[in-house]
Length: 305
Figure: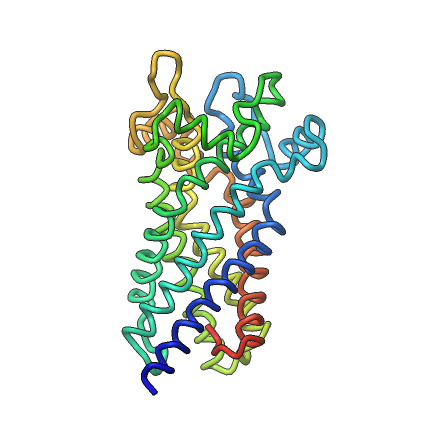
């Protein structure tokens, strides 16, 4: 009996991993152009050449002019690869830790869920950081092409090879500290808020455990995650995009140096560059992901998240 229960538990675990990966790929594909716009906005202002003001509309126009419609999906493949690791690890770990602490009901406090969500996000991000680095570099490449420069990488595998060859194996984890900081804040806001908002809606008869509760919860979690994580996201993006110059020097020594220089040169508001594209992406991403994931779980005979 115990052997069978153990086997069933392993099967359920493997099923959750597969379903989170599929749902994450759906969410990433649907919202990737918004993520590209956000990244380009966050990188804007780093150089004197880009000192003029820009907007999401102008970024989209430049991408379509220089790269066509497919340019909106520049860097999608490493983004998909990243989510094959990142999302299953953080989602499944969060659920495991939550159920381990409170097996029967979901009475954990919001602060406790926030800590669990943050820890799950940190573990997942450390594993997925190389793919995130390649995604950011390839997204930034499209901006270089628009400025008449040659792109640094022909594709994700070329990017991996060049980064390892020129920056060492450890170069794949460049920007991992601000990346981890962002992951902690994102998952603190996203997982904890989604979980808590969903239970609140169900327990207070605002909605049943259905698409209405999932949609409301995803909107709330997207807003909280964006507000908390946007400054760390800007620093993470700039740290990961920088490559050593011919003298082997980087523009930023560390994430703190990047923070100070960004605020000194561009002001505090620069830390929330790309806020609305980030929110515009997180909302739909979470809607697609959570609705898909909850539905897939139902079809697979698993309990609701």
